[in-house]
Length: 141
Image (cartoon, rainbow, N blue to C red; front, side):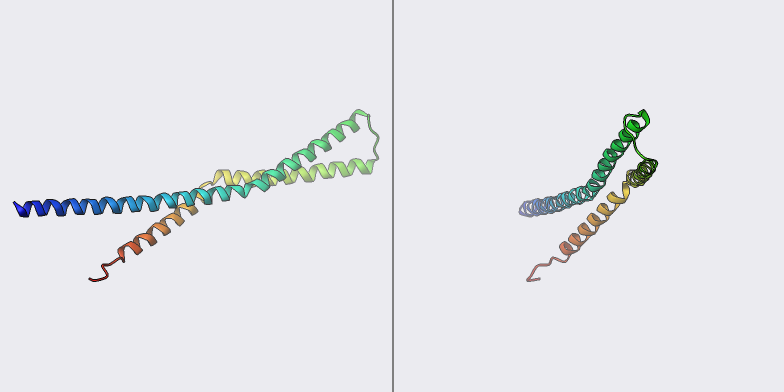
């Protein structure tokens, strides 16, 4: 009877150790998940300046279009050189907007680039932590 009791106690201890190990690993994975989310958020923050540039260019294009419309309506008088400059500026801004939109489309079409990097980093961290855990030994043994 004592042997069965000892076996059940050993089984309970082993189960508790496994539960503690699982909780520890879950905690480590959740920390890694938080780091991934922060990394992903910082990667997305790189798009903020691009978005601001697009907004500024759109405002500039809208101003140029209104100037051109007032010229076309005859409410303002401008030389041919000024008209040419306005048209050149409009074309340049339009080209810049198209380039930025292409960059944004590439990022939107391949979001896995950002997520793959985050997943690779997490896998590396988890494997490193598991290696560290596997190297743990009893100091007396």
